Amino acid sequence: MTTMQAEGGRMKLTLSYLKSGGEVPLLERTIPAHFQDIARRFRDHEAVVAVAQGRRLSYGQLAQEVDILARSLMALGYDKGERIGIWSTNNLEWVLIQLACARIGVILVNINPAYRLPELAYALRQSELQGLFTIPTFRRSDYLAMLAELLPELKQPVVDDLGNTNLPHLRRVICYNPLGSASAKDALPGLFSWIDLLAQADNISQTELESRSNSLHPDEVINIQYTSGTTGHPKAVMLSHHNILNNAWFTARIMGFNEADRLCVPVPFYHCFGTVLATLLCLSCGACLVIACDHFEPGQVLAAIAQEKCTAIHGVPTMFIAELEHQNFKNTDISSLRTGIMAGAPCPPPLMKRVMKDMHCPEIIIGYGQTEAAPLTHLTRRDDSFDQRILTVGRNLPHQEVKIIEVATGETVAVGQVGEICFRGYHVMKGYYNDPEATALAIDNQGWLHSGDLGTMDSEGYVAITGRLKDMIIRGGENIYPAEIEEVLFNHPAVAQVAVIGVPDDYWGEEIMAWISVHSGGEPPSCQELQDYCRDKLAHYKIPKYIWLVEEFPLTVTGKIQKFKMREQAVAQLQNKENS
Image (cartoon, rainbow, N blue to C red):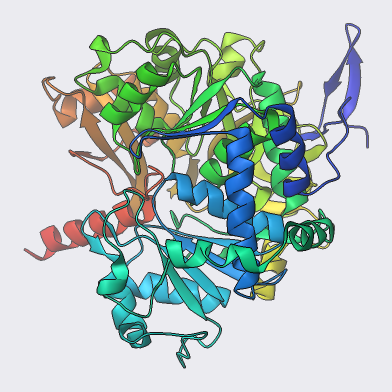
């Protein structure tokens, strides 16, 4: 069965399947091999600026500091294929750790800085970490107190191995303070300090480091990335040099990124958006990485853009909304911006228009993908039409395949029909660490990664997201996609943010609920007004029965709305009302 037909001199898809080629071949090299070449080419160019820390490194300086840290880790006995975790907010040390681990083939395990003790314990145990980097605190979280409870051995000096029976693989915890204040060893003598670590570097020669680095292979796992947990328990995604380096590099090419660009990064490094599409993206082409703040704060992001004359800004839609709504927005010069990536959640068209005009980002592009796909599978292009840029997530990246299937049968659907989006190519993960059953459920025997997302593909290969399989609302037998309702409500002039979920209903099976926040200083509309606004734009069965005006949404650290938590809270409150 053909998937293409000729029309007016162009080939048009008839089935929802597209394989993207590429004039430029894939990079067949490791992260350190590519980074070393970039560092030599752009030795004196600025590589990283950590605004809050007041630190700047050129590419030459960055390469030197990475090698010192890599030799230090080798001196402590960390070997290729072992796992070192990082539990921290954004800072310069994070970048050094990422590159140093890659330099020696140690797998970096990214741990969400918002984790509480049970979540941390799970991640440390599940990934079988041999080492852990941490900072002392984050917001109201006392990391050292949590670690002391989990690892009482840290209360005494530790020589070579913690010896904890519950975490038998973990040998050391290395604590550093990005702001350079007093050592945490006073509180926990068993910690290894950053200074202690770097003192080990002289025990390993540069020749030994080069030998280790040259022994690495592009297909080896170099990163374990925990899924963000918007739909439940996170899984440990294994990604290789080949996965994430190529994803970053081809994204940079599509953005037109080069050594003259400066990327402001408000997204967390622990997430693929930060690890791949910020740090690796910049370092793949010689651009400058600007670390605006340790965790997202819109005022600091705007100030960093102005101070550093950034040309690009990344973020999820909630971040862009917060920046546009910030009290300092109109008084901050961000005219240096031209591009960036908005990803992580569907982008309402009105928001895209505001970012392009008010944030001076005419070349902003929409990205789509998932952690298991390293992470990007689709991007809009700078020369796409306006509708393609605001109504779709674009076409798949070079050297990737995508298809949309009927969930029940697995058959590829016709162009324009809704189905599950599936991916295949260099970017698909190696699997979930220590979880072959979950891996088999995610990747079928033909190598297709099943996303769990619903979408459509048009005749030119552009994909539009309609929702998630688990988010899809089935009301009286009608399939309802929250994204459609969210787009309508977002166009209401009073609405700043909206998220739609399904809640249980005895008669219809499910009913529609919308959570809405309004623009600051605005008069909140009534629920009836919002329902009336929907009537001329949506079929009657798609109009939300419940509309809640809220001040905030449950979010991940990356700014993604956690709909499963919304649903839990809504169900509990609705049940309480019924019982009262």
